[in-house]
Image 1 (cartoon, rainbow, N blue to C red):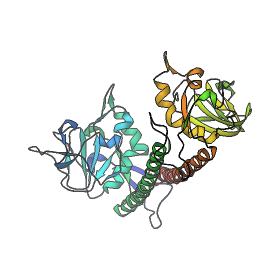
Image 2: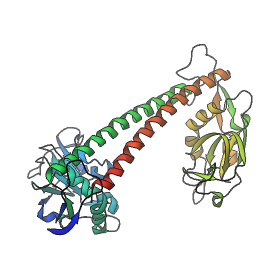
Image 3: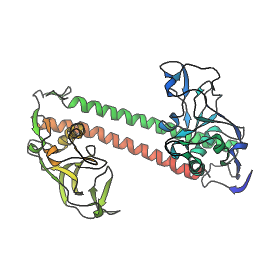
Length: 394
């Protein structure tokens, strides 16, 4: 037993005992998963957990399994309450995480370290402890390898775990279980809204080779007309450089990455649609702005939209098509690079009636606002979880 007095900074009411410390080797039994890899997967069979799931679809509690195999002799089945840690991965962070499976009869595949905690430990608490904070860093440091890193049961056994009485562990585990359920519910709501938006984008804009969308407002039936981007607005690049950004600037500063920086100067005060000329965001980063802002010299802006073009509609229209089209034409140097003439010559379809453009944009705005609100809820829950993880463990 480790003789060290520790308590977390945040606890549930009624718990004030000191946490005790032990190496994991004295707190349970260890074994390895067996036989199976992703090559054994099939459409139907016995449910199985493979090591890759623990870092591609990480969950503290594995409750639903959608991978199956045909059983082999001498396989390892879950008893319920095991803690699983992948024994190989691409980075130390990939494998310095643990999940618990509460169900019985699930096959445990190869490259899994399996721990059966004794009666002193709650498996959810243990999985959380290994995956966050001090133990996570300690396990990451033990990972060995270059292109593929490995963690052995012997590495797990040497981890120093501090833990409270079982009743407190259980309450901590249930608390994070409930937070994860809230996060999952809200993630599903976000994904549903995103799928609705994607479906609307496909149906409210003509597809390749078509001149009318599948879904329209009543009263509009004319075919959409083709314009080159340069026939709908002015196009230019920004003038500033990366060193012009400041940490707490007053104005938005759009640079060559998905991250929006800040600046104390603004060079533009107008409605515009923006995209990146090169760098990590090439062809993918789209912003609609209306106000005071600054631009990096490799960020393109489309502005001063002509009389028959509604700016917000241009944004939605442009963003649905630009990436697929421009990436096939990018100048292939050391990185993909977009030239101004590629944007200028890009053809797009627009409704004749500007009112249809406006109504279509309102629908897109509505779902974007819903997505923003849902994302804020998700972020708040994730921040609460992270703050609690930092304060409720030692």
